[in-house]
Image 1: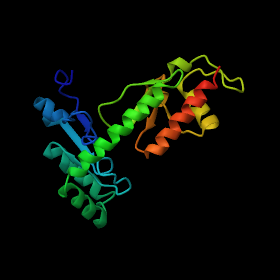
Image 2 (image 1 turned 120 degrees about the vertical axis):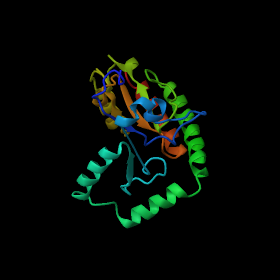
Image 3 (image 1 turned 135 degrees about the vertical axis):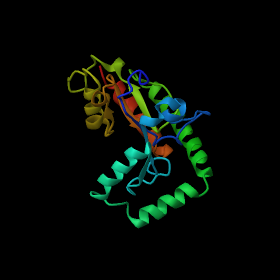
Image 4 (image 1 turned 90 degrees about the horizontal axis):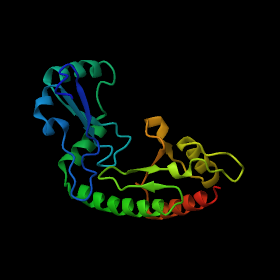
Length: 209
């Protein structure tokens, strides 16, 4: 479709390129289809792969003319990332990369355990993703049920509100991303928190009628 529409430019998010599991790879769109390279801007950063949220360092690769215009805009807004952040990002990118594989292996174990716990919850189901540290959880099986105080669960937004109020769990409604009836959870937490969260989810789902 993109090849058929040459006036469309592409912004490709590569932030999770190193958080992949089970032998999966995350190539850039420009690498998959070289014919799109001249109008693809690939963005990435150190926040996700290197757990450097808050350091505010990102980077982009794309057509030289586009990059030049981006530099003009940035030079008049943020100017540049702080020197400390630049040094930290350089150390992360140029340093040993074994930690990326080790971290992915740890996250894979957490992913598998959280999926197992979620699939044991009445009305919930989830499939293990090939990458990232989020799960999309279908809550279609809870539609039409009622909370202990008599409110009807009509969709994922109601599920999110119910879990926050009755299980002290914060999940993100899929409706906000156009993926109802799902909600999103993160498994980038200690395993003990994942276990506790799974138990709370199970109790909350059992309490619905």
